[in-house]
Length: 343
Image 1: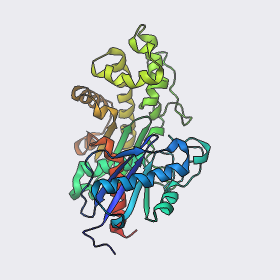
Image 2: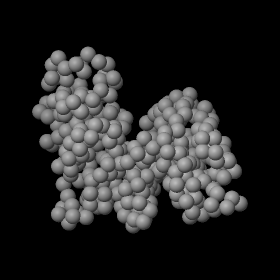
Image 3: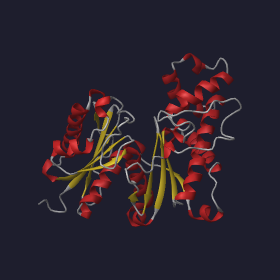
Image 4: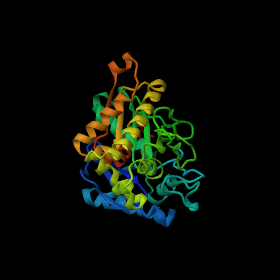
């Protein structure tokens, strides 16, 4: 048995194109300080993707000089919808949409491949867990609660209570992106109801996500700003350029981001009434934006989050730190907690 001072766990954050890996030691210190990315091979199907995960773990161990025998558990995350056991939704999931992935148990497959216990979370929950621990620190994390919204290609999220991720009966709790929002006052006159890839009209992800910009927000606002430079770009490219225009104060981009801020504020308002957390954490591309724009966006989210006076006095709205590494680090934290708990 490995001595307590010597063992480590790993965290693997799996996306549509890359895996980001980290290593966490028994004392709670991360041994990887920067991104450690390798191809995920998700589009090549489950078999190659599982091999890519094994390769990513090995690369992280070589980077840190840690022997394989020292690894007590591996934390794994993927985009949802996915069950608490790591079974991809039977209808497919973000970046795991092809038929071979539907109903595939990625956690079990990786555990069989590595012959090491694998602890699973969806990527939103993993990022939320790291954000919670990073915000409160080791002294308070186990006593506090948080709700995190992570704005990316979709809208991920997580609910943490007393330092533990709330997973739910099927492992799909914290899917904040698929909460229906009231749209009165959020949409402009004549603006169509936004739709989500999950099939729901008017959920949070249909507005507050890169996909929401591409499919719903940008096409409408381009009709209100004829001759805008983004109209000449392919939709997928244009959506990714909107943030840069927002940083420069472009009126069209600011309309889009104000709608996103309002959607997130309404989402946090709903969360205030079902979980009443100590902190609301916001992550995503806006966290990596220029400081002035990041501050403006966070202020707009605060303006659209309606809290009772008692709640406002005891809670805060803050940014998720180390966003690119949050998923891997959260997965590693979950693995370390499982080892310490003997589970």
